[in-house]
Amino acid sequence: MEFCPSMPYKNKIAARAALEMRSGQVINLGIGIPNLILDYLPAGLEVFIQSENGILGIGPRSAAGSEDRNLIDAGANYVTLNPGASFFDSALSFALIRGGRVNLSFLGTLEVSQNGDLANWIVPGKMAPGIGGGMELAQKAQRVIVTTSHSTREGAPKILTQCTLPLTARGCVKTIITELAVIDVTPQGLMLREIALESTLREVQERTDAPLLFPPGEIPRF
Amino acid sequence: MIDKTTTIDNALSQVYDGQTIMVGGFGGPGTPFTLIELLHQQGVKNLTLIKNDANEPGMGISRLLEAGQVKTLIASHIGLNPAAVAMMNRRELEVLLYPQGILAEKIRAGGAGLLGFLTDIGVDTILRDSREVMHLDGREAILERALRADVTLIHAAIADRAGNLIFAKSARNFCPLMATAADRVIVEVEKVVDTGSLDPDQIHLPGAFVDSILALDELTPDYGILPQHAL
Image (cartoon, rainbow over all chains, first blue to last red):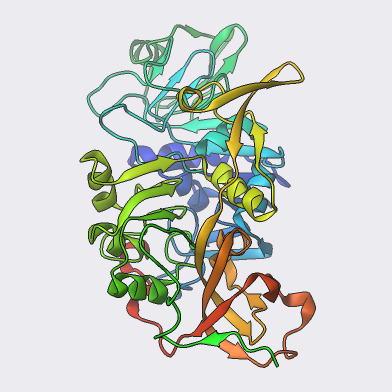
């Protein structure tokens, strides 16, 4: 699927995030924007999408009328299967995760910090629906990519020098993908890798609380 | 021949007030809606429930929560049930939340006769404030105690009369783990077949873990496609 400027921001983030996948990978997609990535898998890419409720190899969401009552993903969506899919129990599902067999985990977030701290499970006194699989994915997946709107609904930055909310895991995030930018977490700090076609370096920095590093030369656009 | 099948009237005859009950299922699949409804009608109270989630308002264990039959819920994520979240926030329901795989492993450990295990999950988070932190080989680890229950209620696709079970697709989830971790294991199934007719290689849970089997005559709408999750 192609990018287009009129794409809703969530779909734009999902479409860009899909380009981070590599054939052969075991990948988990969190609830929210990560779940939309399924709609943007590059043609010919062969990956195994894992779902915490005990599936490896899920495909696109089921078309209306062809749902299977026994086949949902961890977000309760009815899904299809790809060739080579398998089912297992919840303990085995998390052996995959905690044992380090998940190559790539896409997670949404409330906050992310310049050293890769992730805070996405609780707003004390306001929202605490549970932990789900996010903490184990954040801590144990080989690579964690955060897909998130660049700012909160109120316009506050989500990419911070330091998280203010209780952490999900410390120093786990490797890459941040928003509607404005692709940013890598490096030992030196946050390195801007790509910038959205309609954005500017100035806008990205102004809407980011943490300082950004800029690579030499032209920064690729998406 | 061993025959563990039971009737609607007898299925929950040994379930009492104040017990700890594990309930299988992740969302709809694997949730024993019929056994839960029987529990609701029976009116037992003061229960501690262990389930991955809280189903959705008006469905599954939410019926027990909303009827005030549950004192404590041990779960991983209850975000799809605003009724349960509201009860938790009003402190009408005690909710203990664990990372999902840690919840599964606590049940697995209980079923395997272990007392607990050590994990580094959550060691850098506020979870450590309510946990016992130990040291192992120079690393910090959280001690997680094993979980067991008086009763486990699960749903399976097929059982033979000896209790060997086959689950369907994503309906397996917590069901076989919970079946190992309770003193009494009650299974509702969509189909009962004669012992010996299942291929031993295809059995997901051996019958030794199952005490009684309720054959379902019909599947209520709760078991069907939920329009809110379809395209």
